[in-house]
Length: 242
Image 1 (tube, rainbow, N blue to C red):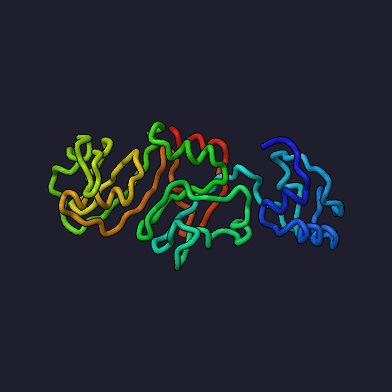
Image 2 (tube, rainbow, N blue to C red):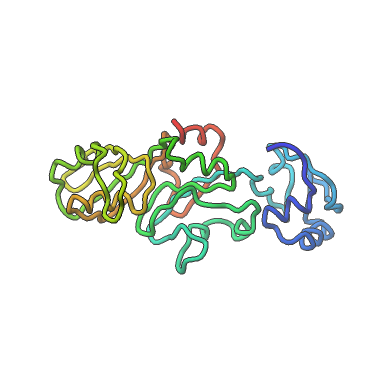
């Protein structure tokens, strides 16, 4: 990100409070730049990559600037929604991030009972690029099943002829690798509602657990625990499209 922004507008858009609340933070000396208190929140700040390290609020480094991209290890039971009851994926993030402008959104969804790699961003152009069918971004899932595989599932998923119940368009080809009689890896490029679960349902099986461990070439880090998140760098974002 480049350019400049008024300090009060920047902090308000990052969720630190209304512009009057930001003015109060400055008056009490809670806003510092390079160790010096900034009292005039009307000053324009250069939006350089090192700004979060230089600008502090109450002694804590500034939150990431707009065009932030996060990876989150979504646990089972959390919902990818702003409105539904129960645990939400946004509950794992600082509460002020719900007030960010532009808003922070999930990149696609994982259903409540599915765990794994979840992406969030406030960069609308990037979000739409990732979910666009034209990009053919692969999503990798590990599924455990209620009944043993029959042996014909991989060919069916790869055929491009499978049509899910209630739909009138066949699925794009998908890859399935058998891991054991009761487990498989499935790689899809679409994001239809409950897609992997419905694919196995079409074969007469039922998915017991579902976990996404990879998007493109981006792997869910082994050291990122359930409910934990971290900011992604440009190289990791590029891996999504690899």
